[in-house]
Image (cartoon, rainbow, N blue to C red):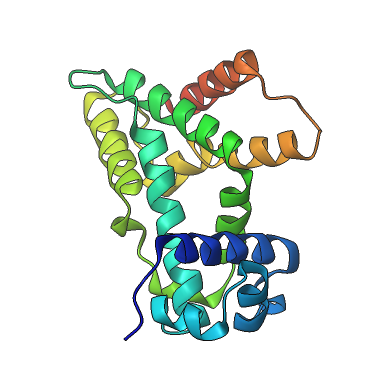
Length: 189
């Protein structure tokens, strides 16, 4: 059995993300990924069972990194609004620094591979779910179904990031803070 090499693994993941963002999931193949990563196709199969396994593991890894980035500012004893704003701003700035992750995530979430993924598997989902329920109980957040609250609070991050990357609006620190405040006001009771 061949040994695993972190540099080769990282190269495969990076090449997969780049090619997916350039060509879409239908436009990539193991051979294209191998060529871009400068490894043999057989090397990819040391790390991944098949193309779907590769793409799914990358998605899970990206979601995990996004969770870590969004949750990094949390401290014990923060109020509901403080937790909300911390997660919102950290999620925004993480994705602002990593547009390739956001592009990959958006593409993956429009595929049939997404059916095998449970949102509950991700720490960020569980934290936001818990936060919204806590806010409803405290009456600081409107008593609405969680998908509605999420749609008006955290989903706009993706739209604003897409506008930023398209050059429609410059999301500087001031605009990020203002957008976060608008998101909070949308769900605040």
